[in-house]
Image 1 (cartoon, rainbow, N blue to C red):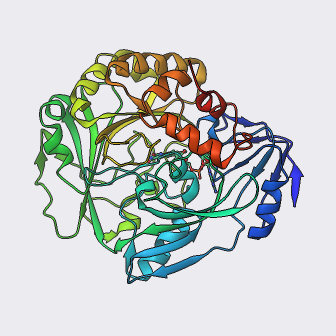
Image 2: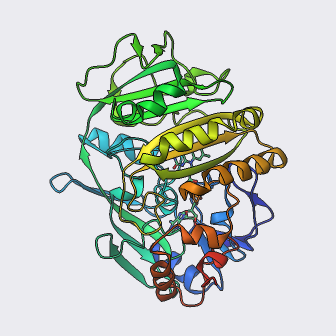
Length: 419
Ligand SMILES: Cc1cc2nc3c(=O)[nH]c(=O)nc-3n(C[C@H](O)[C@H](O)[C@H](O)COP(=O)(O)OP(=O)(O)OC[C@H]3O[C@@H](n4cnc5c(N)ncnc54)[C@H](O)[C@@H]3O)c2cc1C
């Protein structure tokens, strides 16, 4: 049953939802009835987005109580999972069967459907965003009908910002389980990254470079090595191997983070930076992130380094990652092997929004695409212009949702034909 919502906010507390009702149906027919009977509706995952992407002025519906399907087809390397499950729910179960997802985000706390809808990604030259693991989706459309969409036939429906319907279940592509070791290097100069960006990011299965902009160096570079790959030695690109486990944010407890210093562990306990049983990241924060073509990464780093004096006071930590290109229409890595520049800001919009504007001006010449689930200030026309398939996406959304039931204050201007 649905109930009125007094006041609901996202994980960070910066977005207030305007839903008039909230519901968490326990069966698929109930979900279908609720969606069909609503004027406006939208799915909510675990509310970890910093943008108002999940908001609605109607029914906010969670699929977390739907039966937690986890059908594994180990021969075809496929798993069908409930869309509202968190990665921390499904990963240990896959691992127990000798299976794995190719990659994970920095935190396993988020829902599978919510992560996929926004193009959430981890790092790795060969790793696409988490949405690239979607083989097919079972989607409740605006009229309540259930449709199964295979990604190969409907590449616009995966990173879909919730605009195509409510995903009830997903079938994900798997790989055989693998083990990972993490090594952290401190104080790697920006100069080394600018000169040898490709070599640095090719050094491991997944590479994350962190900086606080207080000096022209990465405070930490995390290398996640898969399988038997040899780690670098004590010194690496001007940095030094850390002698203790570290949190990416200075002063935060390393106990919240996945184990480092080469201790081997299963993929799902090393690919995320943060452990599921602890608060991820700082807890009190805002976030933004921009994806540029990876060949532009040195130029982007140089442009941001030029803003360091303005960024440092409002940044808790920044992270640079790489993401493989994909063919999902609204994926920030659409047909562009990408470098992602992330900011964990202080939790104060008054000082963060001016910094966001500066970053966006600096990255505009590189046609940066903002993360859909994080804070950004580019206007809808600018964002739409960075997606070659935006017109096709508008047609797809209109076909599946002719009356704009799944629209909201962020999507409506984006989906409207602009200019
Ligand atoms: C501490 C922290 C660390 C983060 N680290 C990363 C990171 O490493 N990499 C990265 O890329 N991002 C990262 N993010 C951003 C985060 O991954 C995204 O915002 C993600 O979308 C959150 O998932 P969610 O389940 O909370 O989705 P929500 O925020 O609840 O929803 C996001 C979108 O998904 C839609 N949606 C949710 N469920 C469904 C469904 N069943 N059917 C259809 N649409 C649905 C919603 O309508 C909305 O449009 C981080 C966020 C936090 C708070």
